[in-house]
Image (cartoon, rainbow, N blue to C red; front, side, top):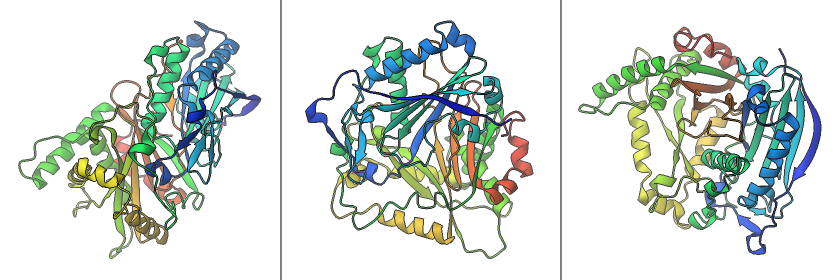
Length: 438
């Protein structure tokens, strides 16, 4: 059934204390500069019984607004506005949009088999909506009394880990535990902004050019372990003496790429270049390492070109992923931080142009596995479910842990034609949980 959402009220939540004048301008880092202006988003679902044990619905909303006002004093850029061609945040305490809605169905209608398209309706902004606000919140009340809290945070100033650290801090403030809140806003000093006038951010230039479908596929722990065993053995055969098994994410990524290639294979002789993209967290790789609560974009995007054998199997993606990650060492980060003589964006733009021309096919992976996705307790327990919205990037895969049992959910965005072929792939369907296809 279609999810109908009715807006009841819209207001602005401002910080409980004014931001100091010397913190008025928050400069974006170099990595912030080249990050597309999209919204990192998640919707957290809570059952009616869990909430009622503590508050009625109106009280729950009031408590969230009060704690949001308080936590914004610790995360002062989030109450500001993006200015000067997205090079700075004016930390003017203008506040955060807070929307309250009624959802005309029961919570179970959404969480029993969540559709990314329906989840998107529970957020204040679309994933690709261009706004000058940094943070937005939507408080959704279902007919049954269950609630869903949708939060959007601009990717322009924060990566996924920063997003979840903010949510954890907000939840701690709501529970009355502000001593758990730690902040670290030093990204522009660690990665100083650069003159980007000679280039442009083309990484989101394909948004809106295609009709994209995003669907959710769930893989149970036993299936993932089977894939780990299979691809780890293949990797040992390729790399003699290699004994370290693949990670869950690497194994599932290898499987999904092979099924994507099988579903979208073209005529023999095609000279297209096929790439796999993924991100690396720079925090633990810096010298000295940064704490996980360091706020900003501390992720670097990597690409590699795996191969398929005559049987359509991929034996080298796990090896290539490790090789690329090993390149992100202290020396690499020193080069990344330097302002002269090295342009890491140049090759990036060449690849984007090749993708636009159809000469290169890129499948991008983002992993939220082992991130504190469910570590969100506003005082009435952890969410029943946490779900991202539909991604609108062509050929993108977002992975996250299931709440329990060690499974992984894959949110896959493809063109309509490619999705029609991909979701009919027999080998894929043999591995997907029967309750996890949507």
